[in-house]
Image (cartoon, rainbow, N blue to C red; front, top):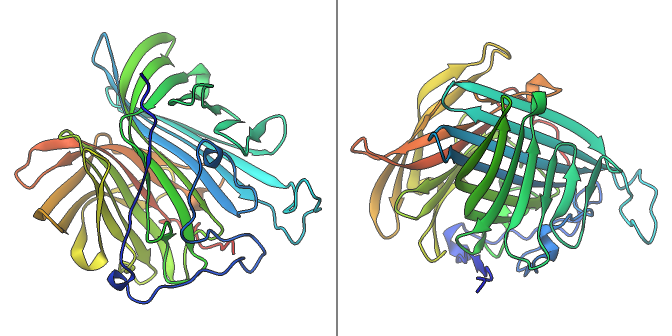
Length: 377
């Protein structure tokens, strides 16, 4: 018997954030803007949404080698960036033009030897980069993902430098979650800075890792995000600090702060909890603090990242909670073709207020090189 994953939505009263901000139908460049109250249909909405300016599919996870207990972290991300619709050749088949750019970001953290492998590849849509619009089925440089015909779970293949390869089967342990008020996740007060944001917060992972000439049988847990937007950040925001936690008690936490250019946190910064049944609680910036405890400076780019943080938050049902996010290895900086757009994306542990390890996490620190300043909309 197969469990068909349902969709859970974070439903909020508009009074939590003040007056409702209605997004426009199109961005200033002409991309469609995600609309409120949209009811996604799967597997179709796992596919590409080419009329929107920006989209990504994102996986991170923690893996263990079955025989030896060696541990690895992995990140696989596919970005789709639409060409300017005002400059594209339009047709009935491609009303927003066909100039789609794809980026593949692949990273592997060897937590045993302290090594970090990563690679970026950029492709125009064509034989080296393709994405189906009706289901999750794409091949972008060294990343492939596919939903099988029975519709349960999906496969993920990621290639690394020097012949490395990760082949995983990912099956959801919980329903897919839709984040945000009326189905929109806000990235600031700019009305167009919204996204559709859907996540599998706990995926059971099994597969094979080809690494340093060895074939290793691995198992573990992963997290997947799929986000569609036409604007990366609202005005006055410099970047974000984001974490996904998978706690040993079977719950998950997503927390992020949207960093203002003056160093403060935007009011749409949030902490979400997903319980055993997939139900969601949320608080915003006035109910939590994000405290930088330790920093790491990259010998490659010279950028400094706050890689150890403490999140103190007032849970609406459980009261005060503390999560300390601590990296498992320091150097997990991803840099590609543009070093000013480098970011830190790493495997971490989660520690409670009593110093106990209570879960695993991934931490993403973006915008510290100033490369997020360009606006899509």
